Length: 365
Image (cartoon, rainbow, N blue to C red):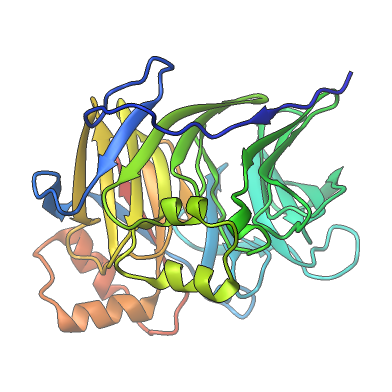
């Protein structure tokens, strides 16, 4: 029998100190840039690795949307040329999925994941295609009834789909389906229905988060469980969209560019016994919440440009960002670079500002 139920975002109804848990197990995280005791003017993390993606006539990436590492391969989704490119772990180009209407070809890839030695690729918002780890086509795994931007398979034959407002009729951001059940999750505020936005990594290591939602969830099969609620002191996007019944496209865009508004929770990942995430204000800030204590960092890694875009991927102990060669060269020319072997190696490897982007793998150990 097919079942249908709704998961409701729970708000904070208690007066509590930072990190205090509610009786239902949800933990509050309070964020305030005015509270100088929370803000630390130093990097959030100390070490990183980098990968220079080889540029050939067949591997011109442009901007990177998403990265997955598996089976000694790096899989890259390009924003400019929306298909999958396959590289070795040291960045050498191997293969790519071909664009077209033929068998195994793709039209517009918006998301993908690597699972059980196979690639699963969401093509044209409605078809999830299966490939082997070298990019050879196997079969169409799922044909979707409605358009979705992103997906994850938490278990075999259990699919969570993310609607970034491309489906104008949907009242929820998430939809779960298996052979026997279906579930909606996370209601859309009325004020932003129908306003598409791009977000590629709503699922990471058992955690679900959306940049337009102040609640962070754990996920297991068809269950979404609220784990954290982030409370910002001051003007913030989340209160603004919940208070309004409607919002114009111009107003939505203006809020997301307003540097006096807390907005856009991103890069959420489990961190030690707690959680790590970033958010936008006048710039990007980086938050570690552990043992019910919150620390806000002003930069990610010493010696690298400010990273204001969302992470493009994760491993078990790394957060993956993408930086353009041009951005790195501009930073090198205008800043004193610390005397560090990894930074020297990175900056000396840049040959042309039009080269493919670099992947920056930040260690969270």
